Amino acid sequence: MARFLITWLPNVNFGHPIIQFLYRVTDPVVKPFEGIIPPYGSVDFSPLILFLVLRLMYPLVRTLLVQLLLLF
Image (tube, rainbow, N blue to C red; front, side, top):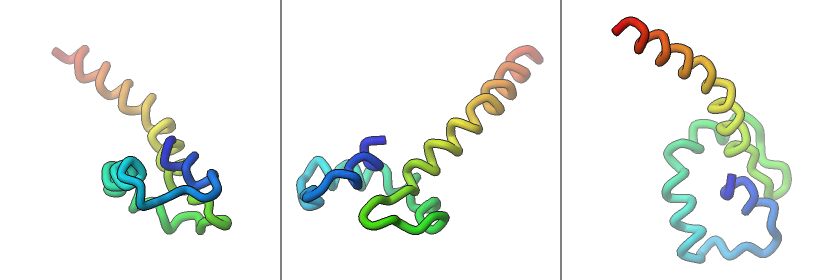
């Protein structure tokens, strides 16, 4: 979420070590979602799409794990 919010802030120094670290850590997960919705100005919606996908997948994964635990 921090990566999504940073794109909303004006005059963010993307050369700052904390911002670079955040992008390095989240790039492998966010990159596949970058082409789904093009950026609107400087706002990148790919982290938001990733968050929504993970939020929608959570109940399914939780149910599958519970079912697996009940088998043992």
